[in-house]
Length: 260
Image (cartoon, rainbow, N blue to C red; front, side, top):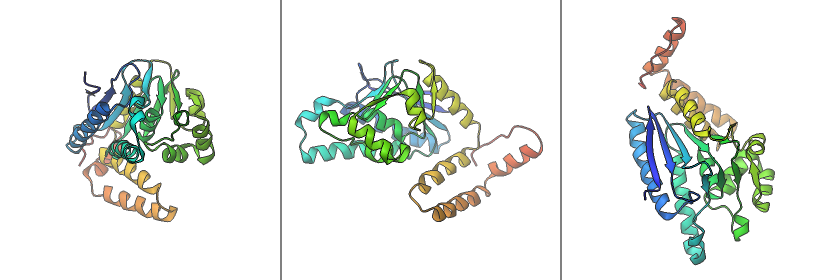
């Protein structure tokens, strides 16, 4: 059985994780995920894909963590290698040059929450449950959770969640900024595809530049981030899409962006 399915809805690609019963991040799934990401990068560069949605197969789990059976044989060297493997794959997803949206259906625990956090936008179903319960296994998050959770919700709340291993309901996750939108149960993928379709109608070079400007600015002092923003703004002024957008606005019509 293939644990990762790559599907398409127009110019939106859907990465569907399918590893019953809880879509655990097995070695096979991670390998297939990396191959899917590499394939998508080529399609994005060719202009065939403008947004990516990541979801879990079935209504109960987005990803409910890692394959725990692998942990019994870990030592310091293999443990570090396992963490770095997951971090590298998740970074490749995070740095795809188009928006990546997580449609969180059901449980997003451990590596599942870490996977959701590398996405640009997180849309959760009302039945979603999110958490970093690694302390219950004598571990800490290893696929980026200690770093990204603190950046999303602040260090105090991140420490509380990681130290206690508590699981959040979707509405509480929304309140603290861990997810960006909550929709009725069974509607997360539908809403993610709707948002992706809206993004598809915008100027793709501008969306790409906005993502890079935001991501780069997070690691820069404000003055340097503003300089980077100005550079991106200026570079877009050389594109045909920028002129098309301005003309369409003045002519009171919908713009026809071509990604050039």
